[in-house]
Image 1 (cartoon, rainbow, N blue to C red):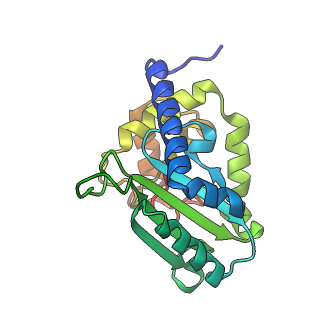
Image 2 (cartoon, rainbow, N blue to C red):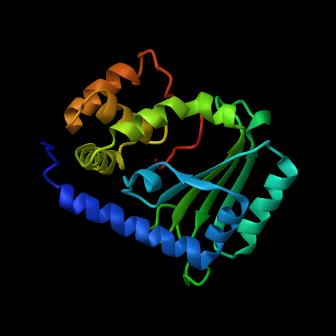
Image 3 (tube, rainbow, N blue to C red):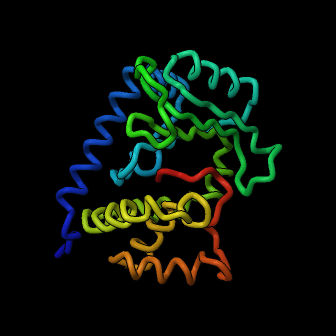
Length: 221
């Protein structure tokens, strides 16, 4: 018998509302059409139904071509919905991951006033192109394991812990959302205190940070 988190109904409703809003942003902005046309697919919290903030991740398995990627990023910018856009050739940067990366902050062009980072109206997009073997090396086996273990019970606790760590000053630095998936689905952790205890021992200062530490921008997974 599944033992859902006590706030599961509210957390599931939050996830559903955010995914619906994401669908609207993707459709109305035209960014979704560009991603679909080029073969990008959603990964992370949108695909796993574990959304607690406005963050989308997309990937394309392809031979990386900087000129093509730059053209794609230009198309995103031309929609008028990007308030910030960063393109990075990670092969030329000292990152642990490999690929071509586009990070966007997306908001309606008619919002009428400056929109600060973190405003509820802003969506964060992480778009990656890399070879299949590079995605596999980074997280392929782990993702398949998590997908196989993802029950409504696990979803409820992932959502609860993710929502709780949002304001943690370590978030996006040494604490990232994939640590929550690992804790809940591999370690069986079900409460915030146990999560922090495990995280400090595994990824905190002085720990032997294992395979999930990454130099990617903080992911919304």
